[in-house]
Image 1: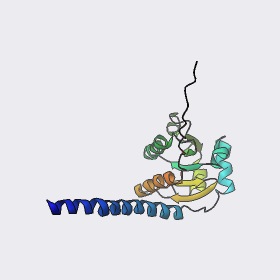
Image 2: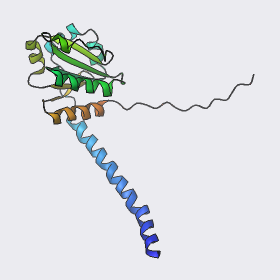
Image 3: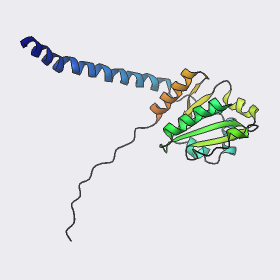
Length: 183
Protein backbone atom coordinates (compact mmCIF):
# COMPACT_ATOMS: atom_id res chain seq x y z
CA UNK A 1 0.00 0.00 0.00
CA UNK A 2 2.90 2.30 0.84
CA UNK A 3 4.44 1.80 -2.62
CA UNK A 4 1.08 2.24 -4.33
CA UNK A 5 0.65 5.71 -2.78
CA UNK A 6 4.18 6.68 -3.77
CA UNK A 7 3.63 5.58 -7.37
CA UNK A 8 0.30 7.41 -7.44
CA UNK A 9 1.83 10.65 -6.13
CA UNK A 10 4.76 10.47 -8.57
CA UNK A 11 2.45 9.83 -11.51
CA UNK A 12 0.10 12.69 -10.54
CA UNK A 13 2.91 15.15 -9.88
CA UNK A 14 5.26 14.30 -12.74
CA UNK A 15 3.80 11.98 -15.37
CA UNK A 16 0.38 13.61 -15.84
CA UNK A 17 1.78 17.15 -16.41
CA UNK A 18 4.47 15.73 -18.70
CA UNK A 19 1.84 13.94 -20.81
CA UNK A 20 -0.27 17.10 -20.98
CA UNK A 21 2.74 19.16 -22.04
CA UNK A 22 3.68 16.70 -24.80
CA UNK A 23 0.09 16.61 -26.08
CA UNK A 24 -0.22 20.41 -26.19
CA UNK A 25 3.22 20.75 -27.75
CA UNK A 26 2.28 18.38 -30.59
CA UNK A 27 -0.82 20.50 -31.34
CA UNK A 28 1.27 23.67 -31.28
CA UNK A 29 3.81 22.15 -33.69
CA UNK A 30 1.01 20.97 -36.02
CA UNK A 31 -0.46 24.47 -36.18
CA UNK A 32 2.95 26.07 -36.65
CA UNK A 33 3.80 23.74 -39.57
CA UNK A 34 0.42 24.38 -41.18
CA UNK A 35 0.87 28.16 -40.93
CA UNK A 36 4.28 27.86 -42.61
CA UNK A 37 2.57 26.10 -45.53
CA UNK A 38 -0.11 28.81 -45.65
CA UNK A 39 2.15 31.87 -46.02
CA UNK A 40 0.98 34.63 -48.37
CA UNK A 41 1.68 33.18 -51.79
CA UNK A 42 0.05 35.31 -54.47
CA UNK A 43 -3.09 37.16 -55.35
CA UNK A 44 -5.76 35.62 -57.53
CA UNK A 45 -4.82 36.71 -61.04
CA UNK A 46 -6.73 39.72 -62.33
CA UNK A 47 -8.47 37.86 -65.13
CA UNK A 48 -9.84 35.13 -62.84
CA UNK A 49 -10.80 37.72 -60.23
CA UNK A 50 -12.71 39.75 -62.83
CA UNK A 51 -14.61 36.67 -64.07
CA UNK A 52 -15.72 35.72 -60.56
CA UNK A 53 -16.49 39.31 -59.49
CA UNK A 54 -18.63 39.88 -62.60
CA UNK A 55 -20.81 36.91 -61.63
CA UNK A 56 -20.94 37.37 -57.83
CA UNK A 57 -21.68 40.87 -56.57
CA UNK A 58 -20.46 40.33 -52.99
CA UNK A 59 -17.27 38.48 -53.94
CA UNK A 60 -14.91 41.47 -53.92
CA UNK A 61 -15.97 42.66 -50.45
CA UNK A 62 -15.76 39.20 -48.89
CA UNK A 63 -12.59 38.17 -50.71
CA UNK A 64 -10.64 41.15 -49.40
CA UNK A 65 -11.37 40.33 -45.77
CA UNK A 66 -11.68 36.93 -44.19
CA UNK A 67 -11.16 33.43 -45.52
CA UNK A 68 -12.45 32.42 -48.95
CA UNK A 69 -12.61 28.88 -50.27
CA UNK A 70 -13.18 28.52 -54.01
CA UNK A 71 -14.24 25.06 -55.18
CA UNK A 72 -14.75 23.59 -58.63
CA UNK A 73 -18.06 21.68 -58.63
CA UNK A 74 -18.52 19.12 -61.40
CA UNK A 75 -20.91 16.55 -59.94
CA UNK A 76 -23.00 15.56 -56.90
CA UNK A 77 -19.93 14.37 -54.94
CA UNK A 78 -18.31 17.80 -55.26
CA UNK A 79 -21.60 19.39 -54.25
CA UNK A 80 -21.70 17.17 -51.17
CA UNK A 81 -18.22 18.42 -50.17
CA UNK A 82 -19.34 21.99 -50.78
CA UNK A 83 -22.31 21.49 -48.46
CA UNK A 84 -20.03 19.91 -45.85
CA UNK A 85 -17.86 23.04 -45.74
CA UNK A 86 -20.89 25.34 -45.74
CA UNK A 87 -22.62 23.40 -42.98
CA UNK A 88 -19.60 23.27 -40.69
CA UNK A 89 -18.35 26.81 -41.21
CA UNK A 90 -21.54 28.76 -41.94
CA UNK A 91 -21.73 30.36 -38.51
CA UNK A 92 -18.59 32.37 -39.27
CA UNK A 93 -19.14 35.78 -40.84
CA UNK A 94 -15.50 35.90 -41.93
CA UNK A 95 -15.74 32.73 -44.04
CA UNK A 96 -16.98 32.73 -47.63
CA UNK A 97 -17.41 29.72 -49.87
CA UNK A 98 -17.56 30.07 -53.65
CA UNK A 99 -18.69 27.17 -55.81
CA UNK A 100 -17.79 27.40 -59.50
CA UNK A 101 -20.49 25.37 -61.25
CA UNK A 102 -20.89 24.56 -64.93
CA UNK A 103 -23.67 26.70 -66.39
CA UNK A 104 -24.79 23.71 -68.46
CA UNK A 105 -25.68 21.83 -65.25
CA UNK A 106 -28.53 23.83 -63.61
CA UNK A 107 -29.44 21.10 -61.12
CA UNK A 108 -26.21 21.80 -59.19
CA UNK A 109 -26.90 25.52 -58.86
CA UNK A 110 -30.60 25.51 -57.98
CA UNK A 111 -30.42 24.83 -54.21
CA UNK A 112 -30.49 27.87 -51.89
CA UNK A 113 -29.81 26.30 -48.50
CA UNK A 114 -26.63 28.16 -47.54
CA UNK A 115 -27.18 31.63 -49.02
CA UNK A 116 -25.22 33.52 -46.36
CA UNK A 117 -22.08 31.41 -46.65
CA UNK A 118 -22.15 29.98 -50.14
CA UNK A 119 -22.09 31.72 -53.51
CA UNK A 120 -22.79 29.52 -56.51
CA UNK A 121 -21.37 30.94 -59.70
CA UNK A 122 -22.48 29.29 -62.96
CA UNK A 123 -19.69 29.63 -65.54
CA UNK A 124 -18.76 27.98 -68.82
CA UNK A 125 -16.39 25.05 -68.32
CA UNK A 126 -13.58 26.85 -70.17
CA UNK A 127 -13.58 29.72 -67.68
CA UNK A 128 -13.70 27.34 -64.72
CA UNK A 129 -10.70 25.48 -66.12
CA UNK A 130 -8.85 28.77 -66.67
CA UNK A 131 -9.44 29.85 -63.06
CA UNK A 132 -8.89 26.52 -61.33
CA UNK A 133 -6.61 24.59 -63.68
CA UNK A 134 -6.12 21.04 -62.41
CA UNK A 135 -6.89 22.05 -58.83
CA UNK A 136 -10.19 21.49 -57.06
CA UNK A 137 -9.82 24.02 -54.23
CA UNK A 138 -8.24 27.46 -53.78
CA UNK A 139 -7.91 28.73 -50.21
CA UNK A 140 -7.44 32.49 -49.83
CA UNK A 141 -7.26 34.90 -46.90
CA UNK A 142 -7.30 38.68 -47.11
CA UNK A 143 -7.03 38.66 -50.93
CA UNK A 144 -3.99 36.34 -51.01
CA UNK A 145 -4.14 32.78 -52.27
CA UNK A 146 -2.69 30.70 -49.45
CA UNK A 147 -2.76 27.26 -51.06
CA UNK A 148 -4.31 25.18 -53.81
CA UNK A 149 -5.45 21.59 -53.43
CA UNK A 150 -6.06 18.61 -55.71
CA UNK A 151 -8.94 16.19 -55.99
CA UNK A 152 -8.13 13.42 -53.48
CA UNK A 153 -9.91 12.76 -50.20
CA UNK A 154 -6.72 13.65 -48.31
CA UNK A 155 -6.69 17.03 -50.07
CA UNK A 156 -10.28 17.65 -48.96
CA UNK A 157 -9.36 16.88 -45.35
CA UNK A 158 -6.32 19.14 -45.60
CA UNK A 159 -8.46 21.98 -47.00
CA UNK A 160 -10.80 21.76 -44.02
CA UNK A 161 -7.91 21.70 -41.51
CA UNK A 162 -6.22 24.67 -43.17
CA UNK A 163 -9.46 26.67 -43.42
CA UNK A 164 -10.09 26.21 -39.69
CA UNK A 165 -6.48 27.19 -38.89
CA UNK A 166 -6.75 30.37 -40.98
CA UNK A 167 -9.99 31.50 -39.36
CA UNK A 168 -9.24 33.87 -36.49
CA UNK A 169 -10.07 32.77 -32.98
CA UNK A 170 -13.25 34.40 -31.76
CA UNK A 171 -12.81 36.78 -28.86
CA UNK A 172 -14.87 36.00 -25.83
CA UNK A 173 -17.14 38.58 -24.33
CA UNK A 174 -15.94 40.04 -21.07
CA UNK A 175 -18.02 39.32 -18.04
CA UNK A 176 -19.57 42.43 -16.54
CA UNK A 177 -21.03 42.62 -13.10
CA UNK A 178 -23.97 44.92 -12.80
CA UNK A 179 -25.80 45.78 -9.67
CA UNK A 180 -29.53 45.85 -9.60
CA UNK A 181 -30.81 49.37 -9.43
CA UNK A 182 -33.04 50.19 -6.55
CA UNK A 183 -36.52 51.30 -7.47
